[in-house]
Length: 291
Image 1: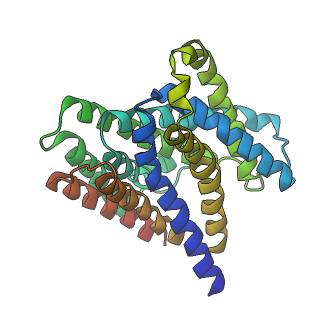
Image 2: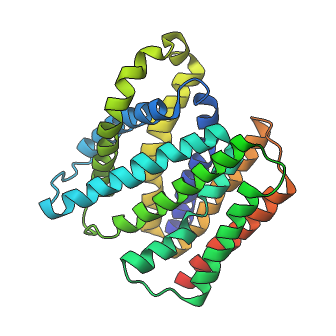
Image 3: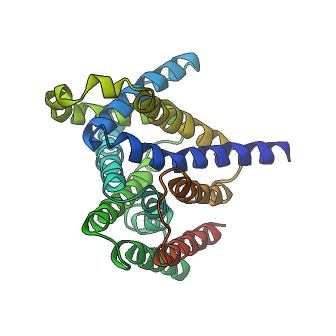
């Protein structure tokens, strides 16, 4: 019972941290463009993860046959997905970012079927359809501007690529430390982004970068969200089974939407709630199917 309660607490905190991430991104991206923001975020995260890895005495060796897989994870998940996520949040709203990316577990069903040969059942198929319709409600229905629509499309790309990355991770040996894998995959993304970011760093205003709000936002994204949230989530999953743990993912869109409403004064439309409910139903079906 104690492990269940503690594990639940870890998962709730991790998911809530990720929900708050969208509000932080919405604030910080007004000063730091998406590419530069992801670069700074990973720079901070790599430093934090390496320190944690050294303290916990992780084994850093990776077999040669898995190196390209980690590179693929870094390119698809940590580069394309995160850049698309933060671009989409910049163009739309924090609540849209939190909700659309919460459709990721449902999209994982398709990739798991194609890559891992997992059986695509009727319930799983329904969950993908519901999640897709929900995304269409949020992105393409209602009185939203072109910027929000493009942002929504970018967020869908983020959800799809993150789902693909999550399935690719399952092809790695289970004895590999997630801290090590994450450090390497983030480093791949950092190296890819560096040639694009370095020539543009001089365009950023140093005074704005060192302001308490922006500096705090970068530390939140790098340490709290990327390093801390990841460690809390995996620790929680060790205490609970993965299927049950997936239920706590719902705290991400809930916190993201509420904070977007409270902090950024974002309005919540009827079509937004319809789309959100459809996505959440789709994800719940996936989780119940796993159970």
